Length: 257
Ligand code: NDP
Ligand code: 8X3
Image 1: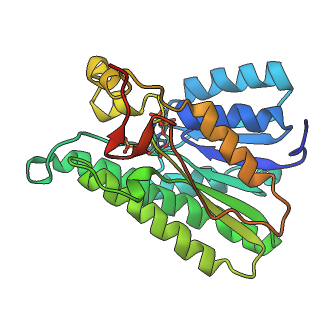
Image 2: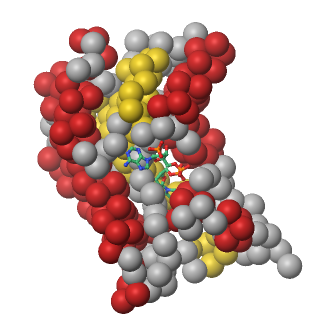
């Protein structure tokens, strides 16, 4: 199907996991893609694959969402036609550590807050005014079950995802009447590079997160994002919580023994 021909989709954090899966899903529907992340080599490899497979028009750019000036510069220097972003997927994000708060590393906290909260704000502040001006657009924030429930050691990561939930709800109110839609897609356990990043590259510890259970894959989340953006213009899905069947909450994961 080509339900998104002539649609420009911007995805932050498109170099891996959920962002990369969203890129593929949007490419398969005929969208043009603006793919952003810090690892440009990864973006370019993905872009070459998608162009070969679907003939997708793609722009890639290095972007660290934590740097406000850089965000403004990257979006400000886009060729004219690429500035009219129809769909923004605010996906760039990460967790760092699982320490008790009183033992936590300030650098980890700052990285999570700067990326998951301030980065999302900087990108949103830059992209959404154009949507409002055009009277149409769709913002998808990738939140988390961690924005609904807190777990031990989750402290600051959970706080950032609670913030994303609040920002999604506030944005929905602020955009009322503009024609711009807002949605939060909030996954549970998804096997990506997320846990490797959380544990600072400790792949063995990361693998324990998904041991003896079937987590979601990033394509499962892209599938939900695609459902949300392909509803008719008068339909707004505001929040979707997506869990693996083997997960009932942040505290309840069924592992086969
Ligand atoms: P990955 O680690 O696989 O992907 C994270 C992406 O974010 C990468 O593309 C990374 O790109 C990008 N990113 C990180 N920091 C920055 C930055 N400062 N500037 C720009 N891009 C950045 O993890 P996921 O795909 O799982 O994570 C995507 C989102 O999903 C995150 O917001 C995460 O919190 C959320 N989520 C994940 C869940 C999971 O279990 N995996 C569950 C619930 C939510 P690069 O390093 O190249 O910059
Ligand atoms: C990622 C899901 O439960 O590891 O947001 O925090 S969890």
